[in-house]
Image (tube, rainbow, N blue to C red; front, side, top):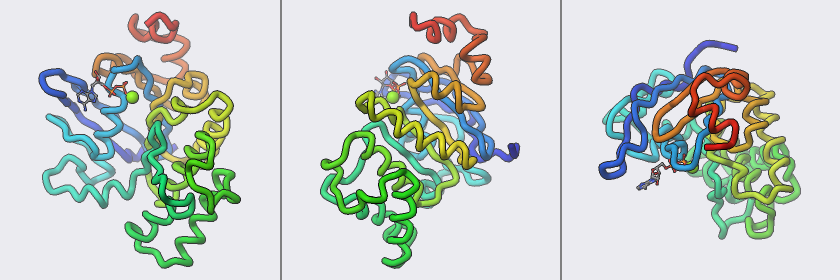
Amino acid sequence: MSSRNLMRVSHLTKYFGDTPVLNDVSLEVAAGEVKGIIGPSGAGKSTLIRCLNGLEPIDSGRIWLEDTELTAARANLDRLRSRIGFVFQDFNLFTHLSVADNIRLGLRRVRRLGRDEADHIVHRELARVGLESKWQQYPAELSGGQQQRVSIARALAMEPELMLFDEPTSALDPESVGGVLRVMRSLVAEGMTMIIVSHEMAFIEAVANDVLFMAEGRVVEEGSAEQIFQHPQQRRTRQFIDGIA
Ligand code: ADP
Ligand code: MG
């Protein structure tokens, strides 16, 4: 693995009102790394991952994507976001658009591709998530797992350098989870740089190079998947892993 840092977060702090929801969070993501983020509900995981994509204002700290500072006053957030794919818990597909149009939108408006080139990518990315035949369907006609795979295809179509996942399987029926995890595993195998917030502990343990355990807005412990899941160093981590937190 290259040790080139793709993303760097330094001393990030964020408040909602008087409540600190992120408290001095720092992390680095190397190119090709898969970083897992776990922790109880309310720990600040979603807020953190939204900050990484410039979706939340922060109170202090700095975030870089390679050499470009996302938190700089003059940062071009649209340009930075086009380099980062974001997959949400609830898919965030446009319900009034077909599967193909959901994927086409960013290709046409953001990447400014012509119709043929965009269509080529739509079909390529749908094939990548195993949904080539669904291009004319509407989101409501698909299962939750299929919708999430479309959402992943839409993100991949932008050819991002980094993919962020916020609990991508939490809203799914149990039988849909496997298909989404399979697609994510194939991205891991391709060497995609990924930050994955998930409660699928076995999946995180299997794919993550490095795991952050968060609680109450802080990074309580960071280490290899083996450390965090088999030999946690902090009592708080151990409680969570043992399922009593
Ligand atoms: P997690 O994803 O780990 O469950 P969140 O980042 O969603 O945690 O939330 C962290 C804390 O911030 C929670 O206490 C939550 O209630 C609070 N919070 C999240 N979003 C907002 C908001 N828009 N306004 C006020 N409080 C919020
Ligand atoms: Mg969350």
